[in-house]
Length: 259
Image (cartoon, rainbow, N blue to C red; front, side):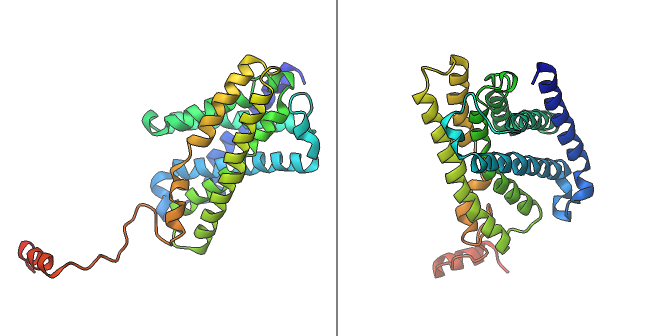
């Protein structure tokens, strides 16, 4: 694939996800609890669509081509190169969307994450333009499987569906996919780069090793509340049952706040 079609595919992906972002409210109208932040509602649904596409595509690639892990540099299954280009287009679109709708101090972690991932998946590492390391980029896209459940959690939170079985089930799956598809995948990528450091270009090695850290460390706050949701409590809210006051404290309180 020549340079022109490569960039056209990235630009087409950018435009497609931009259109999806603009029209998602017609497909998935925000509930009353999410209408105060319509931009966030659109952004999460757009991100979910990308995670399903890229994470599912990457997983299908490794299932259909089990020997892909043996050569992550020069070989890749059909469509893998296009999937990487589409993902680069999405990350660029999401970068622009957050830059236009959020303050920098609120989104700098994700902006940094998207910058590194775009370099890791795209022209910065040579995969997109030279058809090299496409298999390695495909491994990185397995992380998006965990992102599916992170985005679903945010949607359920915005829809005020915290106290539901669906939310608790999603939290459990979220934790499991975090361990398998985020931590284990990024650890395997770092290990592979270390073993092949003599054969990997310095730019690719640097971006790959540095990029693995933000993908795993810059974790959305949603995952940190998984243990809370497993107990059936809404994150960030205190229990409605107050501890009983001792007689002395109760008497003092009645003096301060007489009925």
